[in-house]
Length: 210
Image (cartoon, rainbow, N blue to C red; front, side, top):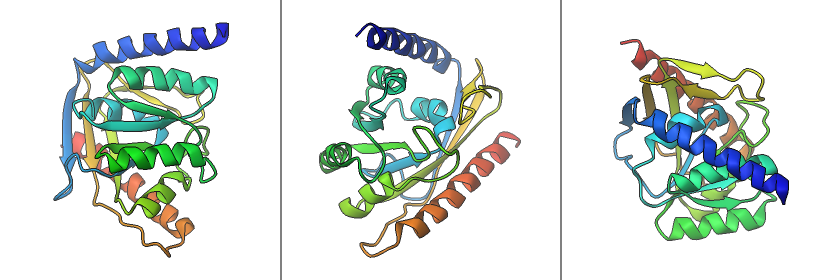
């Protein structure tokens, strides 16, 4: 219990730091045609979670999946403070309870999502959980790429998570919706989504250089 309380305190601290920093960012959000706050499954890389949390801050109906581990507390507390409904559980296909809860939020009109290479990696490798959710619900996958002009990179973390510095410009790009057919092989879809996410990050970086 003591350790859980400690993680909650750290989570609150992270939230207040992000809230202050987010007010200084210059944010540009670019959406593919027809994609704007759509009721769908949003996916990104784990190391982009900060800029993407900031970019989606104004949305009213949003839900996220966070790990049930102690480390998940560090993420779930700030997400809740940013207005997300947080489901605790595995993002793997075997995390049935978490995925079922996410289905309910999708049916209620929420956007839902989680980093697809989390919670522990390997980095830039898509896990099947969110793809399985999209396939079974019939909702689209919306890939999100992001880049920050000036940032701190925490190189000791498994994903080298990025924190935009004060007054940095942030670009987030929402890609074309991806619909997964009931009979599609999720391993093949995962490879496609990996390539799309990496390309969206590159596009966002090029946009910063204009």
